[in-house]
Length: 405
Image 1: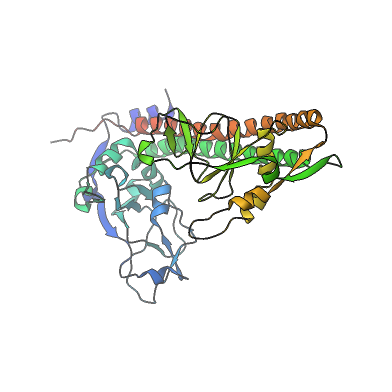
Image 2: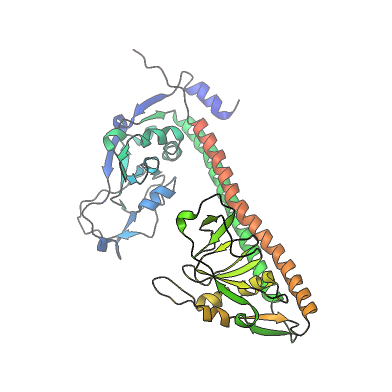
């Protein structure tokens, strides 16, 4: 039997008491009477909507400030307050909670798009317990039903007052917090480790790329306009794109705009984005459709397209510096054609291609390793989050105690 089961059997064998929020405290709003200029060079700390939405426990030491005049009548947050986002574009995202789990050392103001609940008696419940409780499935379901609207949904404080929460004995709350905090801490540690590993691998990849693409006397710098055939993609009607088509469509970013039933470039083609994420170097190992914000570089037989990709990636910062900054950043065709890359053994095609392939093989191994970590990181985080949510909802589901009559 686990420690939690022992505590439940000992302290609440007949179930846990449930109460509606309206019996336990009151709701309050955030800042009032503030203009946009009040949030520039402020003299007091305030809590943003994002701070609430993104954190189980509120970050009470943010850099966000607001101007508060001496003697101004504004409410401040206290230890144990449960803060909620007030509105969203979907009812499922309304009323996201964050809890003040530490005593603020200075006045802490709340933005006007949020509101908070304050317990009349905080001694009956642990703030750290609340941070998990109000994100649980049962509470999120109840809170979602308090929202109404058409294009934007708003939470009703009157309905929120009828939301029911369990009040287990404090030792039970403490044990649940210990278990769930371990999950969140392990996830944070794993994320930090994988992120550090990814950063180290990327630096290692960049080091070898720089070293491999720095030649002695047996190379020549050549402009792309001299050694490749540069062509611009063709505009595609967005309504013709879908999520399940055969060929990815690249427009103004490295992420496919969608999929199309036709392709206009073959696999193993390097391209440069001309607008939006202008200057970004891409490579497709499958047939694809390049839209009109892509410059595609078709290589002759003596130039490996994958080598071209690595050579241009090695100059990514320089290419970005050539982008014309405007409402929509752009890089011109003539600028791309003037970019130079090093060609090893320019007078010996066979030797040149062999050296290009050697460099590609090494860099691709590093590239694959980095991608494996990059792809695995969100998947691992998602798996850990789902594991946490499963145990959270399981641990926070209590039988209801029968009231004596």
